[in-house]
Length: 235
Image (cartoon, rainbow, N blue to C red):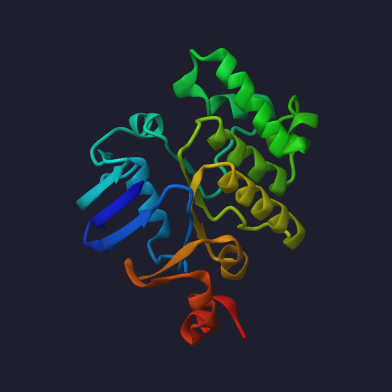
């Protein structure tokens, strides 16, 4: 489904990514593990079209994404939920969610159904749909950000650090929602520093260091790997 082949990304003389080979198969939930600066966000920026790769190619369902605009990539079904939520704080929850349906703005009935699905996934958002997004708790804002991405009807959802700054109980709720999204048929590429929680719901995982993939495998094999445990999980 989603395939990155020899993808490189440079910012001036800095090499953020070097020859990245990565794929997400239909229905998979794949995790990217790595410290800050390892290259996780650069993979998402390159894939979503927000930053053109310096080299290599990115495709989805055999259709080349490299060189396409972000809106074209969203129409192809690859949607980014960025780190930091990037909400419009003065706008209501409903307005923020509706913005995610921009590329499908002519399909009113389809957008209404999708909004109902988001409210079913996050009932608290239905209760607070008229409330300003900036007045919500951090966890609720993250739910809005994920819901907005779902309004774009992704085939592949790119989730960049969704648990960042959230309380443990809220992290659990967010990860349960991600699992539901995946089980409903959406492939997920998840970048996370909370390695233990991410590996518990993943099908496969990649480990990044300094812009390179240094390890990949099943969650079980990475959980057993001493280097992975020391760096990302702890004893």
